[in-house]
Length: 85
Length: 207
Image (cartoon, rainbow over all chains, first blue to last red; front, side, top):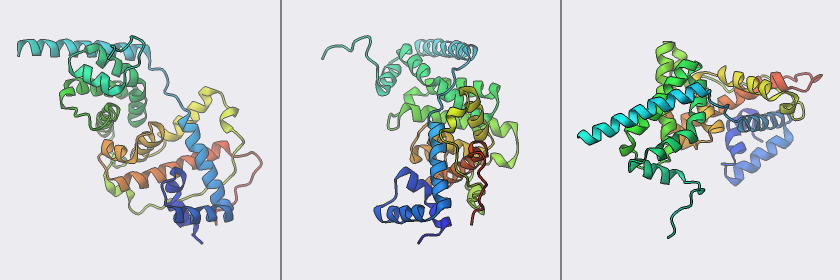
């Protein structure tokens, strides 16, 4: 049986399902037999879930406006440069 | 082929192509599409509103100036993220000349993946808080990670870039991304456990 340390080192592969079949079976066996690692897997999964659901906040309107002003200035400058070049 | 209708959502490659051909509206559409994500990313990395705004502007202006160099082998989004990450890290280094800002590989040596808190969580802890409270808890937890860890976590698990894209954006190796992501995830799990653990449960010691 895998040790908890070995299990933890493969945790990402286990969660992201990027490990091969044999290792996956070993990891699964460890989780069913080790209550601590079971809790770690469960709470790490939930950690990822809550972050995935986190939508970016609306950008402050003045930040958006200043970006647009800077962008239009840049566009005008590039256009002028192309015309003269 | 019929011309695309007005309501059609243009895909990214199409917008990039049109922007390259001088259609400024197409580039503006790309900005509108990604500005929120880029601003969030910059804010989390720099942890400073003013720096985040600078990064936001510099990233899109640089992308606009260098659009001709963009080859289209990677996605535009990955490219703009890479520029924003670079700019953010530069800001961070300027502000704190402290070693925790180091993005080099040395940060990975000699540190164990320690797990201290093992406790079952409340059922659906996210429903126990208001949206704002939950956001505060989650953002605070990410912001308390070291920059090298929080940047990897944000790119992989929040922005959902691949391991390879994250490595490229941060200019670090794929194994470094993997080991930092593991630490970041475990550290966040630990921080959130303190917040979300089921009330009345004792922490049972880890081995």
